[in-house]
Amino acid sequence: MTTRTRMNVYFDPDLLKQVEALSLRRKVSKSAIVEAAVASFLSGDTSDRLEAAMSRRLDRLGRQIDSLDEDLAILGETVSLFIRFWLTITPPLPESAKESARAKGVERFEGFMQSLGRRLATGDRFLKELSRDIDVSSPSADVD
Image 1 (cartoon, rainbow, N blue to C red):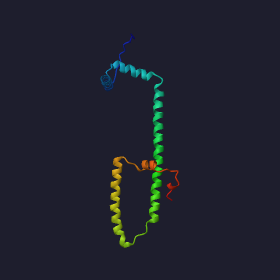
Image 2: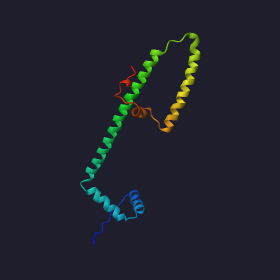
Image 3: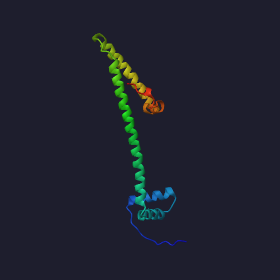
Image 4: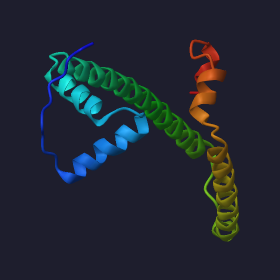
């Protein structure tokens, strides 16, 4: 049996409430919680563990940023190719047709926004589909 030495300490009332709540949740004594906290504080590997955890998180964030960067580049290329294509094939409209074209454009845009909303609600993403469906190395992948 391990002998223990009694020690009286003073806690901030809010901190003591947290220790008591943890003691009830974990079903261990307050002394065991305080002893574990002091041992953790005094152990030299605490900072190493924290540094390793932070390193893992930073690595994960770096990979996520790289993925976002790639997605943004794909999105920029997609938009620029669409604009180039649209400007190339769309002839100028005569004055008499501009009002009906504007109304049709508003109608189509509303349909586009509804479709986009449905896709976002279901979690479908164009860039995920693109990476699954298109082989970048194939010669037909260029639309120029």
